[in-house]
Amino acid sequence: MNSGDLYISHFGLSERPFTLLPDPGFLYWSSQHRHAFSILEFGVMSHAPITLITGEIGSGKTTLLQQLISQMEDNVTTGLVSNAQGGRGEILQWVLNALNVSVDSQSSYVQLFQALMDYLIGEYAAGRRVVLIFDEAQNLSREGLEELRLLTNINSNKDELIQLILVGQPELQDMVLHPQMRQLAQRVAASFHLPSMDAETTAGYIAHRLRVAGGTGQEFATDACALVHKATGGVPRLVNQLCEFAMLYTWTDEARTVTARIVQNVLRDGVFFGAHALSEGAEGTKPQMLVLRDGQKIPPEEKTG
Picture 1 (cartoon, rainbow, N blue to C red):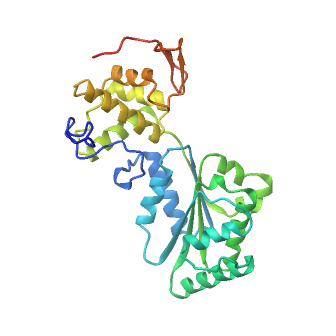
Picture 2 (tube, rainbow, N blue to C red):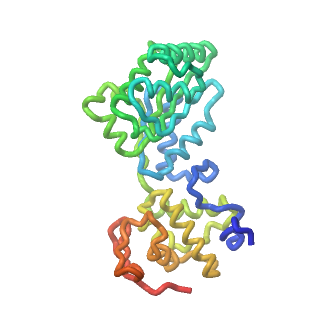
Picture 3 (spheres, one colour):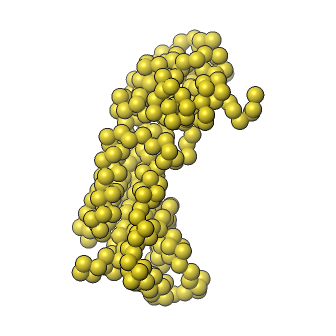
């Protein structure tokens, strides 16, 4: 067997369905993801000065951004900034890098700002507008957010030279709503918080990814999907991690269906680090009790197989 094949052939799949890399091809359009994406589209089409999208780690925000970027029209120039940090001047450098604007490394703040102005005016004259996306924007300092707000001052009257999309974890919303950030908050024309998936959505998400990977969508039993949801809280990235291990365990057991018992075995073996908590007995003994993300406890049972 090809060492990179793992369980793929065993389940008749064409690829791994639960990888952790964001992939728009696997995007599952739950109702909440549709709402989040519609807000992103509205922000771009309505020329909103600032659009704000928040969600828990692994909730699918970056995948939505990739989908949005892939659908941008030709008259929109997009700059993507990920994990930007720094103070005055450094944020502006991140922006110029994202837009592929070359500047001298010794340029002053005024020169950097002028380079950006020249670029934006050039794009506007060519019939294009600029959308600047900041992913993981919760890493920005308050000073950095204020610098971004000042960028929107470039817009005047009906002329929109630049739009901002800020995407990040839930604390980003708290940062924007801080009393000292009132002027920034007032320029947020569209916002949405992407929640975790409920049990039904989680089951649909699992089936969808399996079908995209060439499966039937029924490789996971209903009770297995329910347990995956309880253990992960419905966070897509955690669902992917747990499902990957469950399929691996099912393959090594030479079974064809992922059951709740197999998911329990994964959880008790401690290979899934996304579990909320795992209380173990003395060194060398197996876990005594699993505590799921919703607080439910599962007593130990003997492994199957």
